[in-house]
Length: 273
Image 1 (cartoon, helix red, strand yellow):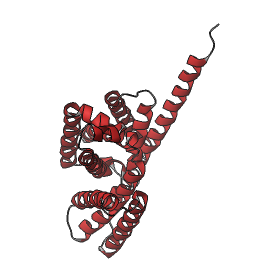
Image 2 (spheres, one colour):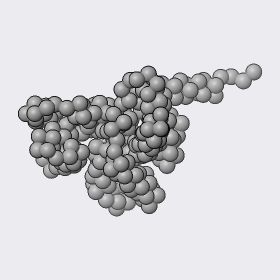
Image 3 (spheres, one colour):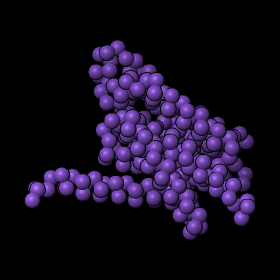
Image 4 (spheres, helix red, strand yellow):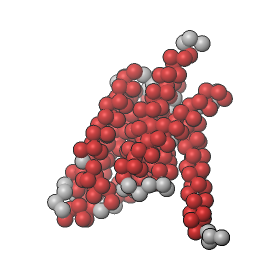
């Protein structure tokens, strides 16, 4: 029992830090409607993980390199070559998965640890992962505090932002970069297959109750921490996969938030007396 308590304090810290990152970055995903792009990015980084494992490197470094390469190719393909964004995403999504499967098949000893990158296992989070999440949270919070107005303008009206002289393309690239890094760091929590849900569901639930960017980020972070903690607790009590349970709880939480929102709307519209 003594060894279990520190372990779950450790994993709760992971749930807390990852919830903050998911809430803030997820708000970018929801307000800028980047769910499809984020999903494509999450699946494409399997190629980087597979190559890193094949070459005996740290898989997260391979995932990070693949994520940033995905963003660069997506931006160049859209802005310089005039390709449709959905076409580039589909191509990178498929190519990344195919390369990941290829390199994994060529790697001797397909390990369970590698499966944790696909489906997540919060129990395998290391001190280095926590440190990286803490740095990401600090970067996100400082970025929002220092550039709140810029982020607000670019998130909701790019044309107006460009007219005001804001560096729209640069900020859009930074948004994509932040989302890419967040996705990579969250793979230990819920895995590449499920990470887009962790970004989108808490932020979507928060969007039901707030139209202001800052309050939406705060609420989304609170929802994400709650969903992470509840999913982790249920997975421990029932001996179920932690990543899957976190997403199931997140989906249930979003459904509950939607139901509350509908009830609130009906109550306001109901005639008095």
